[in-house]
Length: 182
Ligand SMILES: C[S@@+](CC[C@H](N)C(=O)[O-])C[C@H]1O[C@@H](n2cnc3c(N)ncnc32)[C@H](O)[C@@H]1O
Image (tube, rainbow, N blue to C red):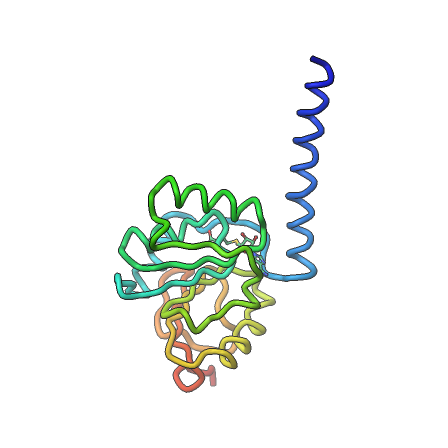
């Protein structure tokens, strides 16, 4: 019995260690943001401001527990998440399966810096503010067609949003459309 309890304790501690290891890994090696989910009301607003329809393909950069992907799929859109934390990948995939949304939603265990952004018509972003400039440059370089980019909390520092509602910012991206701040 005692061995069993030690084993459970060891398992819990190992999982905790792995979880925090991934948070540190994310901070320094594949920077994005630590896990901090968007509130349900902001998820609704992000999808509303982007005018998402069932024809859209949404990519969430750092998809966490999959809440934005699931909300998009409930409106009939296809959705792809890039998530670096394997616990969150597992958790979101399980939830997606339980909700029978696998045909519309997939989660890739991969850094979003290596994502194929051109699959998307809408990209959702909730990242550390100091990475927004780098992300802007990456999107400007890689996007080949117009994409609506919706940011939660932190705007792109050099661009004027086409719409703003509270802490949510909408940008029309490809190199010619995104409006630069004067
Ligand atoms: C602030 S949370 C946002 C989660 C989700 N998008 C939401 O709005 O609820 C940022 C997420 O990005 C993930 N992340 C951080 N860096 C990443 C990277 N380089 N590639 C993929 N995911 C990353 C984190 O693990 C975390 O789940």
